[in-house]
Image 1 (cartoon, rainbow, N blue to C red):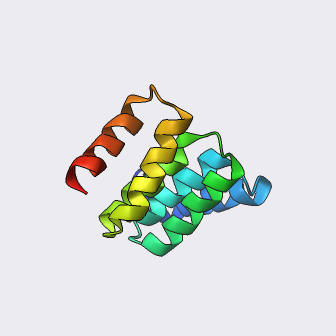
Image 2 (image 1 turned 135 degrees about the vertical axis):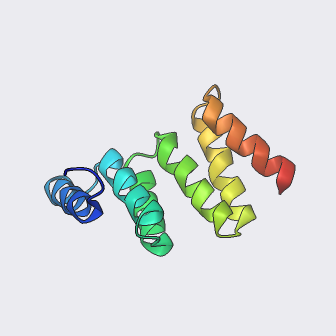
Length: 106
């Protein structure tokens, strides 16, 4: 069964990153796996930051990083990342909603 095999997914992400170490989507997807499946928040943060650094014009990594930091209780850092995501893409609804929620709830 190909479903529910996080170890196999981890191997695929690592192979993808071995081929292209700065691929933003591979970094974000692997970070999501680390966060949501393996509960490795520190590892996910490192990967999201690498994704953000590899493509500073892509708001997706910033958005994910903001959510992770908010969930870890770092509201100030989360707000900074959400704000940057909105600055990059002022009409991106997901970024606007995340930033708005952060501003409202602090």
